[in-house]
Image 1: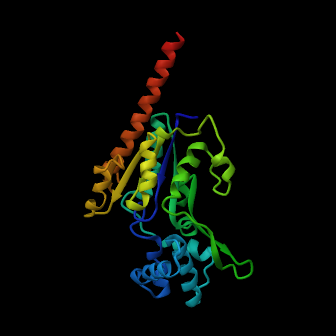
Image 2: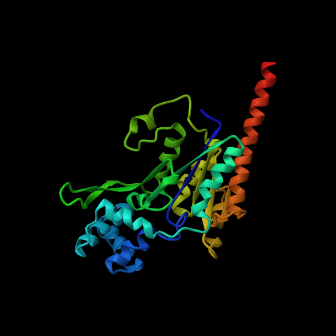
Image 3: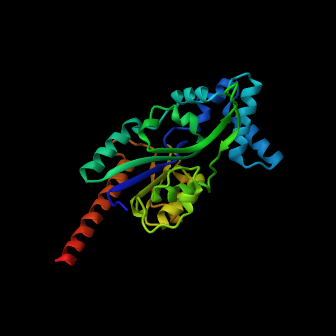
Amino acid sequence: MSDKLIAIMYDFDKTLCTTDMQNYAFIPNLGLTPEQFWGLTEEFSKKHGVERILSYMYVMIAQAKEKNIPLTKEYLNNLGHSIKFFNGVTTWFKRINEYGAKKGLKIEHYIISSGTKEIIEGSIIAKEFKKIYGCEFAYDSISKCAIWPAFAINYTQKTQYFFRISKGALNERNDFDINAKTKTRRIPYSNMIYIGDGMTDVPAMILGKKNGGTSIALYSQGKKEAVLPLLKDERVNFICRADYSINSPLDNVVKLTIDQIAIKNTLRKMSKKYLDE
């Protein structure tokens, strides 16, 4: 276990980017509004009893086919170029990495999203993450078009990635490593920060907080009331406006958390030193 590693885990939609990733280009390219597309998703879920994440993936495939849009991995990657991020996001990672380095710590960033991984991978910030976890499609070997969900992450399933990252069992297709008993962890729970936007992240937020990590719920401008109950009910450690710029509340909270981890490491070393004397 390395006390010098910190994992910051992020939801994607409405946490790093300003709305659902499909809303920027995928849905307009279908000639639909977000309300129409997500309405179709909800309708399909209710009619067939399909879990909502699988439902939106089905509707993406069905609507693209209906509108004669080749839903290839390349097409989905290109959609990532249209994503708009909250203030300060594009410079956030470099700044936080440098701040951690000054404290003798290494910061690793992870995405844990119920959104489309292929779209995230096409975004300008994809390179900043050690690992991106998201929903993926299976593709036809001839047409190269999406034909079926290959991998899906719903809201409660997000919690397993907290353990994966702590253990260093990062391959989401390998269930043995995540379930194997281990005496050591690559990253201690206390060095893990989870950042999400609300109710869909609650299971992961609670898990992080209860295990000694830090959970932060973000809200868009004017929507503070949506996350206040999470703080009042002690499901998260902090709530902050979705603003990643320098000296924003979020920036300060994360830096203070890094400071706290660095101080604990120093105190632990001092305690060991005195024990050995």
